[in-house]
Image (cartoon, rainbow, N blue to C red; front, side, top):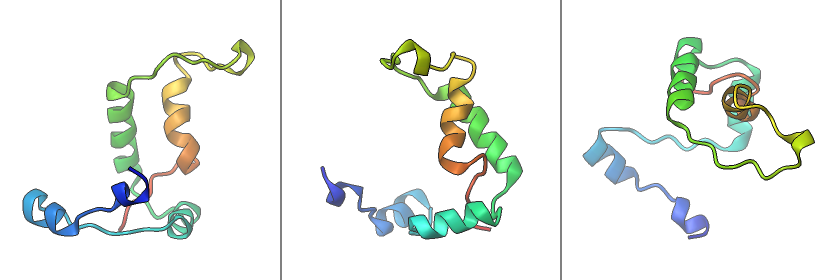
Length: 89
């Protein structure tokens, strides 16, 4: 698909799904994380959903680099955000 496959059709999201789309680059994402511009309750709700619904494939890393099943879900979700959720407020 390439980069073109990641283009979001704003009209579709707004007219069919009733959702507004906001484009945010990595610099803005980092700013929101650093300045803690997020909703902690929303973060916990999202992480709970991820813990319940995400299915992890087999870990093909060497044993010394593998995480146990209990540590894997939250650490994977939090790795990207440094433990913080980024959402527009």
